[in-house]
Length: 334
Image (cartoon, rainbow, N blue to C red):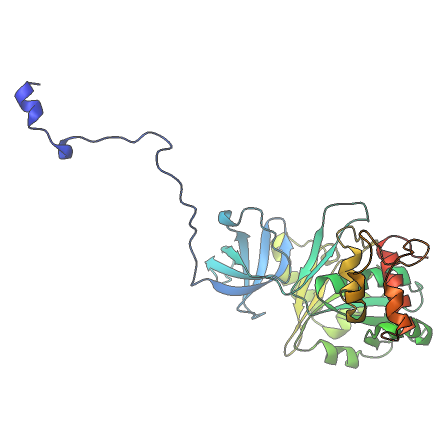
């Protein structure tokens, strides 16, 4: 090229190819303002079933969008969907947003396991299903579920089954000071009172295998097997007892049926998490020595919670019940 020709070149004649990595990746993510709101009703192997706009008749299968990374998405989560939300066979939407949770029910495998498992999100109440006989009630399990409720922002409800086999009076009396609402059911009668408590709300059910939880769900929802099959179809027919699933109630409301559990670990919950659910003791707990477990003598001889009872600001039974829950969290239940 002659020198004179070189001088006639301008920027339009030259194409500069940028090197790799010279263009910074944007941290901005699409807002997805037009995402369809939905509630997660089932989870199985990387696929989520969702009720689009809360309508149980609009079941959409979705995957988690790459931009969410490893953000956990669980049954009960309110999410935003984009893509094909028609719910037609072989279609797949994307979950692009998980809304802030109003409550979270968590547990660990045991009290030494650092890994938290989120059982359900956004449930308003937890029904602790316990049989009065065959098998005998396990108050330690009930106490642990109560602890998880208080720490996670759920209202606990005792649901006592098989009242045709045993009198519920003694068990109800042991929780009277905690003012936990209770519903008693019988095998030979329909649970009408329970249905009234569930209508219009998102409620989770938890209990040991054999306490009658599945029987209860089938009475509440005669088509539960059909509904569960539709929700779990993405998982190719996996049996419903191994994963939580949300089932719509007639009229309004949802029941989240959770798998039967053998243990309810509380490694993620502190003593202060429990005390904060008891307003009459919360302020006094702040005066306790650092590391106080609030169990009282001999474990915590300088605990300030006894002073609240001494002053007459709380009933002795409330402190006894609170410390029973604290002992359960600490693995000291009798």
